[in-house]
Image: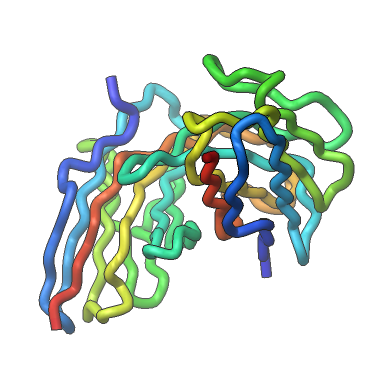
Amino acid sequence: AQKITQTQPGMFVQEKEAVTLDCTYDTSDQSYGLFWYKQPSSGEMIFLIYQGSYDEQNATEGRYSLNFQKARKSANLVISASQLGDSAMYFCAMREGFSGGYQKVTFGTGTKLQVIP
Amino acid sequence: GAVVSQHPSRVICKSGTSVKIECRSLDFQATTMFWYRQFPKQSLMLMATSNEGSKATYEQGVEKDKFLINHASLTLSTLTVTSAHPEDSSFYICSASLTPGTEERNIQYFGAGTRLSVL
């Protein structure tokens, strides 16, 4: 079974509108972390936002917010007021467990977002 | 903060040659760095976890003799693709996390990637 599922291979959004990118995850761990990264065409992976499994509040970072629904195992990324520069691939990722050391991070297949002027 | 530098950004080489890719954490110490490979329009696949001062941990199916990893200091890890062949052509990207205990979130900060083309 896929640990991270992104069901939207591609999305379009009008400039200045909000858009939601879907992500569901599968884990039996009680402690885990969820991440969203942006990958422009240049290739670098840019960290956007993090949500810990024990965080009670949804994470927010500027125009990015993470809609965390633990019972449904979903961690959707919401981008408000889309800008042309938001056009990129977006990856959802999960780190399972935390023992004070490093744990592997698993990435989803990504969603290509295109912002339309 | 948390800047990771990766060089070169692009390399074209002949089949049979070896290519070295460097990954540096510029403003923090990284006990552990990660090396990923990404095929066009696909996700990142973890190749190996690089630990400073010890042997790297390779993922299943990754040839350790093919992809040599050295993590000689807290700020530098290198990936050497030995005797490269056209099927090794890919996008290679490294990441680093802050030392455990200083960043519970263990966010991985990525380099800009290296696009390898083997002729």
